[in-house]
Image 1 (cartoon, one colour):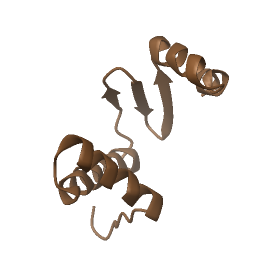
Image 2 (cartoon, one colour):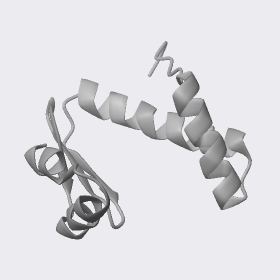
Image 3 (cartoon, rainbow, N blue to C red):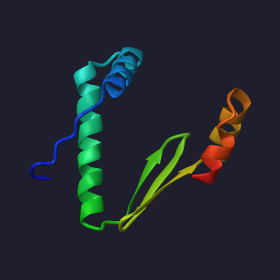
Length: 93
């Protein structure tokens, strides 16, 4: 991971601040967890590892070699479809 630097955009920083507020955790803790996860992901992808990130109630990020795809759980897609018109885009991903 030498030299790999992960910077967050202003929008990402705002999301981290909101998550920190909702979880009653320091923003620095949220940012650290996200950056650590991204570093592991970068290492695994750059070395051709196969792995999955499971996001409870959301879906699975499937990584095989250098191929990455997000599979969303059907319940989430239906919930999103009821509140927004994004279901088709999620299903196509």
